Image 1 (cartoon, rainbow, N blue to C red):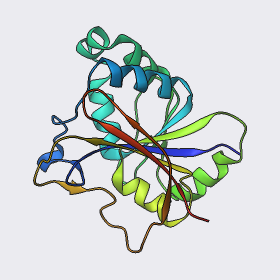
Image 2: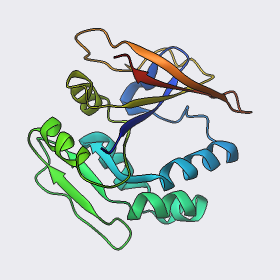
Image 3: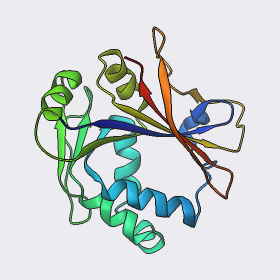
Length: 189
């Protein structure tokens, strides 16, 4: 069975995004990019909610992204992507943004189905609302939370909208020279 993992950057005070969806506080450097490249190479399919999809679609295919981060841009632009949205009517592919599918109903049923198919890992990058719906249905196998050494004071809390507890066990921890700490967790049985 394919595994689904969530990768989320958060601030020390627990926000995954600042006011107005600000991500400018993300602490990214060459060591982080090396980690991101290795992680994304192992991913078979990217899973996005609408807002994260729109952010990714508007950034990764751009000339600036391809120039500044060609390896990650190539991976993001070419990997299969599934967008879960009840409001989008369509998704479009371009020469630089390929392999995009839109699912507009029953995200959990769709994820449950593709987990049973053969293939590599399924990754959720960001997409808080979407991941909370999958958490409720027990469909996320691993949580990779990258804590950035910055407090931003306001924003959207990690897992905003959760209605009950999420009990996890720590499986690994990795420190980065820039102060980021990656903590990986699996759900407790």
